[in-house]
Amino acid sequence: QVQLVESGGGLVQTGGSLRLSCAASGRSFENYDMGWFRRVPGKEREFVAAINWSDGATHYRDSVKWRFTISLDNAENTVFLQMNNLKPEDTGTYYCAVGRHYYNMDYWGKGTRVTVSS
Image 1: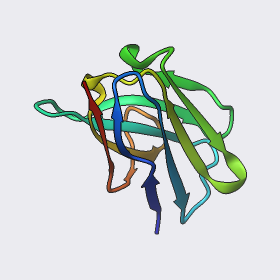
Image 2: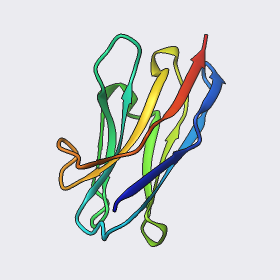
Image 3: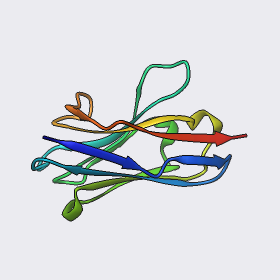
């Protein structure tokens, strides 16, 4: 049974930083994409960033490029999202996800809340 446990959310001021973590367990993630999505107020859930467990290839949403960095600790099956220069529009619930392709994830965490105050 795959489990994804997120941590690291919280309240931060505009321009601040947060680091999200997601510990994955329950199967081999070789060749899987591991990523982050978010649900912001009034919008559908949206893709944020993803990284491939095997080759490290990364993908980002345009609005977070150069501010967010996704990384992976393969030995610990943990994916991180370093978020810098946070903006109020980054406020939302952030979900960790794993799947064969980042545009069609199979497993989801319960989410961690990020609030950016202006």
